[in-house]
Structures are given as structure tokens and as C-alpha cells.
Amino acid sequence: MSERGRRKVRTGVVVSDARDKTVTVEIGDAVRHPIYRKTVRSTTRLHAHDELNDARKGDTVKVMETRPLSKTKRWRVVEIVERAR
Image (cartoon, rainbow, N blue to C red):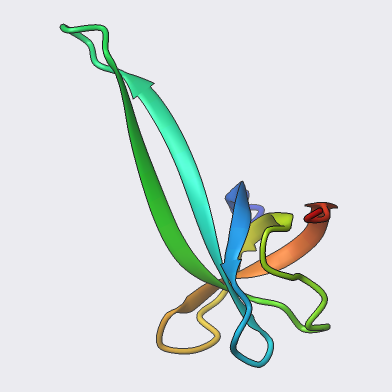
């Protein structure tokens, strides 16, 4: 049997921690346009499971893809990279 595929890992900033055991993480991405060479920025918001309720608004966190935990949660907080000031 083959190994399970590698899970995606992303780094983002917590923009909301209002719900129990859930945080909203915003992930920013900058891509250079292939023709016009202008940097185009895009952001993605996703809901992540925070079992210990440890992450706070403004923290930089690392999230990993996981099985569906609810209607919108498919990610979980792996570690807090940097605390908000």
C-alpha cells in the first residue's frame, strides 16, 4: 500500500478568535503577472481548529490540512510561529 499524500502546510495571521476552538486565519500571497510584471496580491481566509484555544488575534500561525472537522473547518493549527505584540 502506498504512503498517504503529504498534507499542505500554510502560514498565516489569525484575524478572528471569537469562536470556541476555532480561529480564522488569513493567508496572503503575491504573484507576479506573467505579461505586465505587476505584483498581484491575493488573500485567502480559512477556518482552523485550535484545540487548546491558544492562538490569539494577530498571532502568526502554521496550519495543516486535515480531515473535515465541521462544515467549514478542514485545517488545524500546528504551531504558533510568532505572538502578536
